View 1 (tube, rainbow, N blue to C red):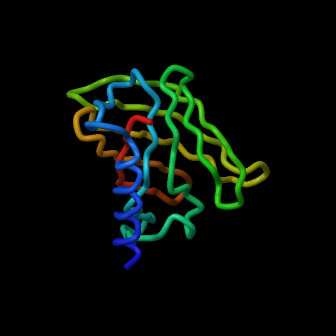
View 2 (view 1 turned 135 degrees about the horizontal axis):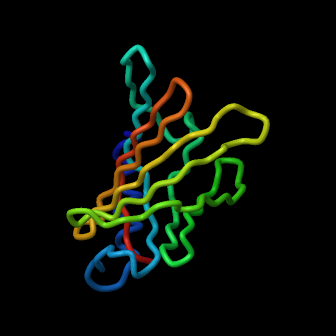
Length: 142
């Protein structure tokens, strides 16, 4: 049921754009929705989790011109991440960076976000100390 609700949310976000789906080519800001989230630990165990369990926002706003990704944490705080590297490879926008996380907590993470320019499909991979996350979703111009 949660998967269905998440999929309906993505359909609603994608439906908010007018006309045909615009290509996601980095010329305009996009909003991305997290749909499926996997958490993996060193023993090889991976499990599907929900965004709230991992403290991962459901939506990300990507500002290519400003080189920032902004999201709202579950507690309502808006935070942003610097895009430290961006490149287009085989029709995919690849964005990368690193985050310190919460002050006073050893929770730094490196991340890579990949967006298919034609379909808007998205994959984020993030890794930290003894944990990795893979997030599948979709992005659209807003």
